[in-house]
Image 1 (cartoon, chains in turn yellow, green):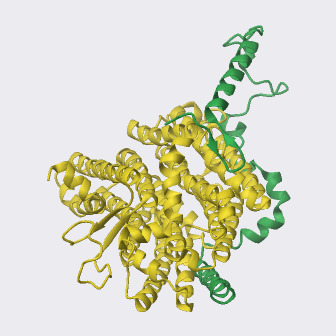
Image 2 (cartoon, each protein chain N blue to C red; image 1 turned 90 degrees about the vertical axis):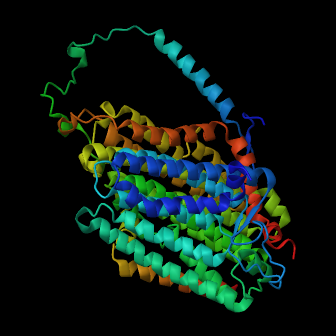
Image 3 (cartoon, each protein chain N blue to C red; image 1 turned 90 degrees about the horizontal axis):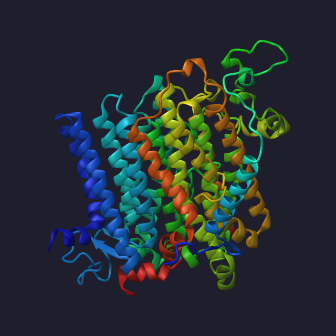
Length: 525
Length: 115
């Protein structure tokens, strides 16, 4: 077996093994020198991203990839002597998982490049990078695993690492308080996830998602498990009215980490969609659960954006917008779920709504990541997040301002940026489901634009203020990190259809096709 | 693969490249109209100074309209809404947990009993 064959065959395992190994070895590498540490962490991230792209390419060209840990062959999901039960830990990377892997790889790499500059003035960077790589491990694991207990393990890795990185800057105890809130709520959610896993295992003797899906009866216990999972994962992705941790955590974490916290939240959103589509699908009342997700989405859109407008802290404002944008994803995919049983409505608009919601996950990760990085660049140069103390920075931080404009126009759904393409898909398909929701979504976009006009004016416009006369542009690595995301925002906005064809539609298909997922693991058993 | 293919949106299409072409064409027309104007600006003269009815120009920090002053009217118009929604965001962890438990309980009723 050549080296390339080894990488391709073992890509799902390497996706978590590489960052995990690097995370635990980085304190030792850091003893050598700061340059060695930076090289180690950047090399790890680039290698992990390359593996993610290789895996995604394989999935999108040949179909779902199964990886069985400890088996004689990587695709031997059901051993001959196991009684038809997939007893080992299995990674099931279908198009939806690959879609999330691509997001994690792009944002993870951009943010890390940015961090090399933005965190360079801080101490204990070995700890910071170790936590960051553990977050990478957690996200890749959550979106790739086909084993539900394994999902819980990676959820915990992600939560613990995220709490650590939120508290990293301490900031007079405020960051620690935000991390404590996030940690306790995450633990509460994780307990419910574990409880649900116990319910499945007690009923079906299985932890494998495909196996549970195949045996799903939608008994009263399954309903309780579904409620626990929907509540826990909706809270983890920041859906209203369980979003309260989001502004605290997002605003207090280092900006580079905040940009990746967006992806971490989306991993929970992925988990929510995986549960309702792959594990339950038509066994449950799709209309009821779909409407619950729609209501959570609409509440998130409206309350998120209206709470953003009066904010004075730039990162708190952006955090509320993250809540609001999550609402669009919930709305789009919720509509797809609500009409899942009706073939006519699904083909008329349900599938398009799902595609819009899933496309928006990608777009949001790019432009929201970009916006948090611009906020970080501003904080890096002037040392405050208070919008009332800012002004005139457009005179000196021109590139940061341009990146901010790109991100702001994209999040507001202004053509031709990527946010417009996915929002238009959501507006028009949701309009056919219920015009009121489409109108609400459009009004929320207008309010989003208004909010970012306020930020733009407060931060960049006006005369050059005397206290910021010496402010310089952000360092080059930070600009490159922002530039990568900005380029994707523009490119995916100008050429959305290839993205929809290659990434989004296969992901939506994979999500809706429960039978295909089960057959890929159990072979139609 | 056609890079410039329009997106089907469920109700219509979105063709960003066509939109961009129209935008560039409009920009060129605007630029040409602007170029026909007479240039009378002289840099470094009194023209460049702000005229405030003869009053002295305030210091730079006093001129800039700060974030808190923006959208005052919007916030006043929705005062009732904000009076209800802002106090819910207490920042207290136990309140966050109560919301989480309450939503879980509500979902239990809707999915577990009514569904």
